[in-house]
Image (cartoon, rainbow over all chains, first blue to last red; front, side, top):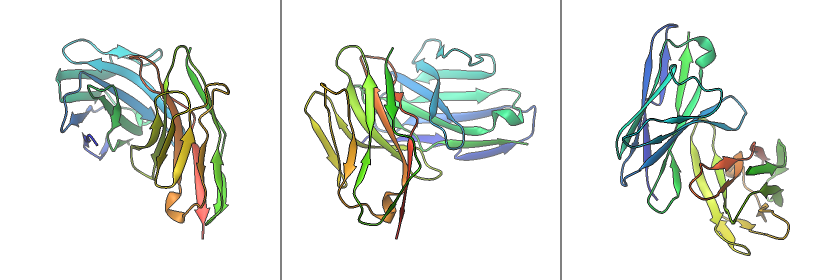
Length: 114
Length: 111
C-alpha cells in the first residue's frame, strides 16, 4: 500500500517555541492531506483539511493562527505549532488521500511541550 | 451528519477467544466502511474495508460485513492472539469528506 511518512516522530520543546511537523506521501501524489490530533486513549480529532496550493480548511474550534498548515506540493504538507504551550502536547497524525480516494496515515508525531 | 458508533472498551480476552466489536453508522448516501488498527505509539493501519452493501472485508483473520439493513459493520475474529492487542477504530468515508471515526475500542488479549 501507499506510504506516508512524518518527521519528526517525536519532539520535545520549551514553552513558547514553534515546532514544525512534516508529512510526506512517498509513492503517490496527494491532492488532499489531513491533520489529526489524538489525546491519550481517545479517538482522532480532525484538525484541518489541506489541499495543495490553497488555504487549509480548519475544523471548528481549531485556531488557524496557532496551527499553521502549508501544503506546498502534492507530496508535502507541514503543520507548525506556533508558540507552543504544554496543553498543545499531543500525538499529531497526518493522512494523505490518494487518487482512488483512499486515506493513508503517517506514523504520528508525539509532541511534548515543557 | 455522518457518524460512527462503536462499542466502548476496553475489551479483554484470553488467547484463542472469539472477538466481536460492534460498529454502527449513520450516513447519507452509500459510504465506504473501514476498520483501522493502532498499535501502541504508532499511527493507524488499515485492517480491512468494504465499499458496498453485503461486501465482506477480511485480513489477518479479521472479518466485517457491510450490512446496509442494520447500518452495521461489526468486526469479528474467530481466535484472537496476543499480537492483536491494539486499539481498533471503525470509520466511514462518504464522498470527498474526511474519514469519520468511531471513538475506538481497546482490545487486550492475554496469554
